[in-house]
Length: 133
Image (cartoon, rainbow, N blue to C red; front, top):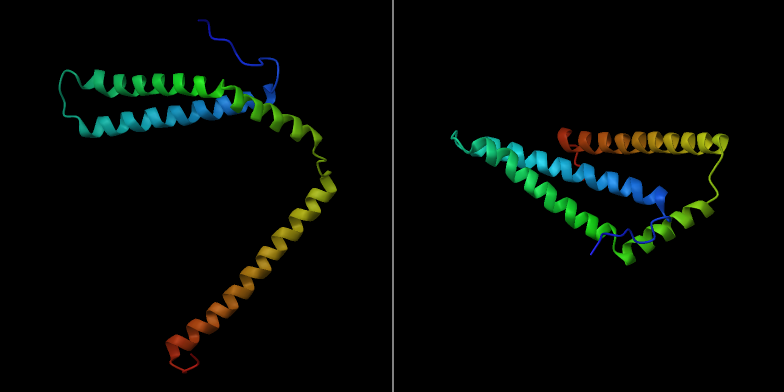
């Protein structure tokens, strides 16, 4: 039975980043396993094979599992539908994006100042023992 990609011509712009993200996660997990094995295995003749072999086997298994999962019809149909919905989105222009960003940053700064002000008053009342609370 040959491996066939389900609906291979569709959803390219969503499938590729998903596969890259999964590959990065697998690489990080394999590296972390290698680091843990390096720290916890005593020095012997098999250490090199264990430190590099076990992460390689885990990565190969995870790659096989992710290839199977990323080729499931339900998941692929979801990715294809996601891509088609993203093409329908009306994206903001540069001036609107800059204006919205400025509003968000100003709001966050003002809220931080208000929280700092009331926190300072509260701490002052508790530390000075003014009996406010």
